[in-house]
Image (cartoon, rainbow, N blue to C red):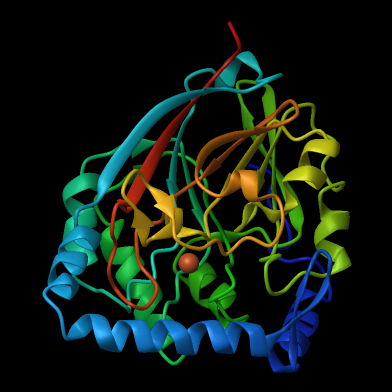
Length: 308
Ligand SMILES: [Fe+2]
């Protein structure tokens, strides 16, 4: 792997400015914090009411009932040496919210061997939880996984700038608004990671999509909201999370609400945007309230294949 700076120059001060400002930032401009605050209060009310019912216990049991999704993805332009390359894709762990997910995850993950680990953000759940607690629980969950190559991570909208240092200290390569190259038997695969674009978008994120000149490129972006830009920039594969698959869904898996403001076709599972294929992971963890209905949490093992 070609190593270099883990973050783009000037990223941290810009991130801290948005964290301290009165609004979030998305690809279409400022996003008022008030809207998210109202949504959070409504969820708190829902959670309070739910706790008074037997549905709460069932919802927590559902959240602990993780699945391991294993599937092949045909990647346009994939170099021959990467045919069969295995990626463990983990997202939205939020393990401070429901630590009992750690043993549930270990039952699915222990003994797994992969070439690349990709964590696509939202390691933190509760904004008041210690960053080190959430990151430590993630490391516990991953303890039984053997990763032959890089351990890559990006940040989500729940993660503060401090999470970058913490994950780095635990052995992750943070790719924030920059690109790296993975080399294998003389072949090259580009990987570009962006900071979260749902709440912490800056122009540097969009520019970073052009920072790799590799013929075959993967994008790691917390939400699918850059799908159009990534497809236009020629990315072959886009790995995301953020939506938790809806977390609370109607029978049949239809989410009650969407947390995507744009590119909503990338809300869950496999999707396409032009020539680019995307996968939106339903997340290992949960946001408050710590329940799932009609939507299982997951870890994904994605095997890259050359098109037949
Ligand atoms: Fe999340």
